[in-house]
Image (cartoon, rainbow, N blue to C red):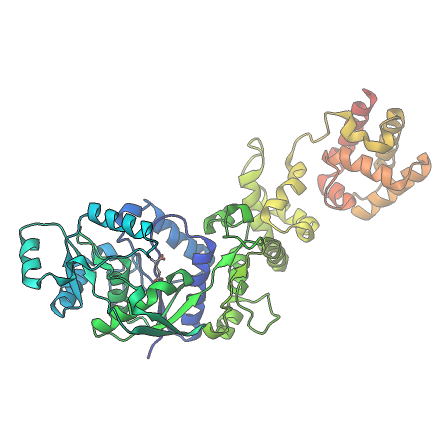
Amino acid sequence: MTVRVRYAPSPTGEPHVGNIRTALWSWLHARHHGGVFFVRIEDTDQTRLVPGSADRILESLRWLGMDWDEGPDKGGPFAPYTQSQRLPLYQAAAARLIASFDAYRCFCSSARLEELRNEQRANHQPPGYDGHCSTLLPDEAEARAVIGEPSVVRFRMPDEGATSFTDLLRGEITVENATLDDFVILKSDGFPTYHLAHVVDDHEMQVTHVSRGDEWIPSAPRHVRLFEALGYEVPVYVHTSVILGPDGGKLSKRHGAKAVLEYAQDGYLPDALFNFLAITGWAPDGTTEIMTRDEAIAAFDFAQLNAHPATFDVPKLDWMNGMYLRALPVPVLAEHFAVWLERTLPADVPRPLDRAFVEEITPLVRERVKLLADVTPLVDFFFASDPTPAKADTLLGKPYASRPEVAVATLHAAATALEGIDAWEADAIETALRGAAEATGEKVGDLFMLCRVAVTGKAVTPPLFETMAIVGEETSLARLRAAARVAATE
Ligand code: GLU
């Protein structure tokens, strides 16, 4: 039998990382077994729809490199893949359940249900429908519906016994039927609830494994009952655990969790986020963390997933992103940098950036970058026309704050030493500056820092000599002399 798994998001907002990780594991399962991974949009709760959300969900999958074989945008043998376009199927299933006495029409008003809830609360009883309409004669109920009285359809749960199902990660789970009320499967507007819609679709679309968040465990017995009442085979269940924040609380923005596309915005590589999500709650052999997609596909097994909540570890994600960035060949990394820099450098820097130039500076910073976002402050001075600090105190720092005249002399000495070199290359620049330190009696580190701030405008930069080599002779010398003028104003 072909493995068929689905990602069934509700288009109610941006997909968050926990939701996408469950989809990612399903994708790995499908690819591992040479099966089918498809997307189904579950938009039956019309009150919660967020315009544009379905597109963003597909865009998130695309960015992460999770391709789907069937879906709302590409069709497939069981199209349509958007539930609001499949209403007759659910209505027919509900009618079938009414006919078999597994479901009934309920005419209770929202006011009555509200009153019931209040009463239950006051008596410290669990909430749930009291079966008020379950004894209506089917013909009578049908007659009331035909003349237009609003109704929902409820599934009839047995009062006695228990319902069991097997979860691949958690073993057999059994729930007493008495704890489950007669739940709504079709709403008064003719739309199904999630319970009915996904059961019908998982059957129609021949889903073999249902992998979804563990918040659905309490509802699973209802779904098992529905599958059985409709004469469908129950799929294999895999209820994945949640991802928690490092403080053990519900994962949120405050823990650094974002919508998937925000990671793209913030300079993460899709391969890194993919790898990170794959291993958040899954340790294939207990130690391996960095895995290519193909390695993850080869190793994946639902049964190995951790049934306990995983922790969202932002430092690990950042570390992983750095690993992925550094592993890229220089020209590829340079292209990432160029695109990022074009987005983030000041508006007065002309675009497009010279790709050859970006490739030249890439090796200087690749070891220092964890996120693409780190690159801009490290290299922006390469693109600035005049990065010399306007303020003398930035330039002078501690060693020269009380003796600016020494800084002036040192900067001139450095410039003069540099003027004498034959080839403007890192080694020669270093030799000249060391010579200047010796000649002036300044500490080598102090002189280097003075020159660094003079040439780049900042104290933290890529390696100084390589940087000056790329900045060029004329510009470097001009900036040293300009910095001397700034220091002289103190
Ligand atoms: N639409 C449901 C949700 O987004 C799907 C759950 C499932 O995978 O069955 O939570």
